[in-house]
Length: 214
Ligand code: SF4
Ligand code: SF4
Image (cartoon, rainbow, N blue to C red; front, side, top):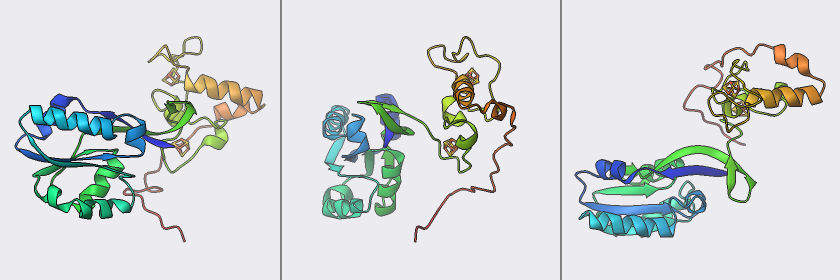
């Protein structure tokens, strides 16, 4: 399971760094390295581009796992270079950005967009199979999540635009609700296609969501 990210355009990063002439860069050695969006190579490339822009890069680091507790230690060890910067450019998923922002009393700027939490289907190929909605319906949709498999995230599908099993929004992709239909049919549970799913109840999983495992 990995947090999948993509790098923001350099123009957007440049815009967000406007007014900050000294920058510290932090990457992540886990998901962002795997995604080739915030590993050592990408951090060094970013350093070069920022220097070309006339920024002073006070230092850089690739934190082993930016979203975990050891991040605090890494920050302390690099405190001098971090304090010398006006802001921190973080090349990790939003979890890492959040984690760093809790330890650093300076503006923290994300260089990446966090897309989804994905599982690896085949080497290097990740798929979003759950959007962590907090009210799982997989038991009634043959194990296929309608929120992620359907382009429109319909809880009660299909939408009517299905074309030969393909999605009307993206003809390269299978219609999620056709997949659900086919699998329910194989299981002899087609009656579930008629079941109405109520809109999600926001009171069940109010945000921010927290939990304690004891
Ligand atoms: S319904 Fe989909 S998004 Fe919600 S918990 Fe189940 S798999 Fe995840
Ligand atoms: S065609 Fe299928 S996957 Fe596409 S939006 Fe409609 S129901 Fe969802």
